[in-house]
Length: 120
Length: 258
Image (cartoon, rainbow over all chains, first blue to last red):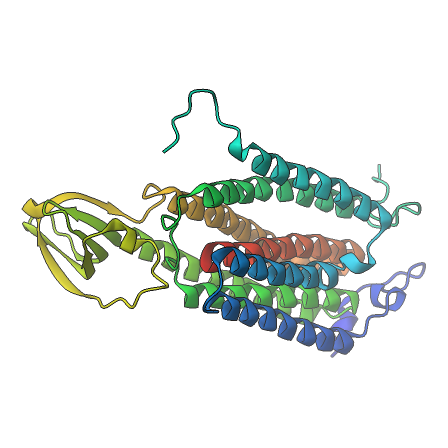
């Protein structure tokens, strides 16, 4: 017996999967590609971390760029952020603004020592 | 009285209540973890050259955990798709996978904490430093035994990636120990940040697992009576789980690689 028979339906409302037809196998394939992409990103980050002859700052920057690409894949495809509603984008834009402010203020304050601080 | 837009999306925004709620919650979570990340950046950049730990984490376990969490994110999405397709059996299967991956992640991570808490830095009265995992620390005996190495400069303990380390069993008489400390959050700034950030993340993994476990165990009744509401709950819990994965995507490179 198919699992789909487990849902009860009413005369006024067709079952959920009839109103929102979803191709499960297409999603499965897409998830396979996404997972391979994530694995590649992890491998790339590991490879960069072992690259000889580069400064720590350069390697860290490259690794974080790959991490951002990885995060984009997860947020864009797995969280469906690429096809979200305008209200969610507005909410996230405010969050990004505040987040940048939070990080920026921290970095901006790095050289702002209280008077009388002993430097060594 | 029915609460409007609890199941069906509001026509103007296209969103149901819980979805707005979870995104607002995730926005606050971004600021919570953002504060910790900016603290890390501030302290890392401000550290004197050669004094920030590098290679202290178990890279193999960290990489396995990253893959495990990515897999759990995929199974979470597939559980939601299964609900959309009206296949409750598949939902049960994929969310069972998610819970198993979450359990694996937590066990691996707790094992890493155990490794840290049994790793000791022992300053000897001779000025040397013994560093390694505690093998024997019986208070009735007048010695401790560690599996590790001895160095004469503390700076040699910071960057482990650039060294080939040969470990051996070292027996240290207690009379020769000036001070002894495990690699817990009290050890230094890096370990404090590591335990705080990964600990908070692990709490999120546990919280997400509880919600997903509840839907997995007790979801059948709601699925039968109100499948759309149930599917919405699966989606909302899935969004939280993906956020947990997102945080780890940044924690892994920051703590294990840079």
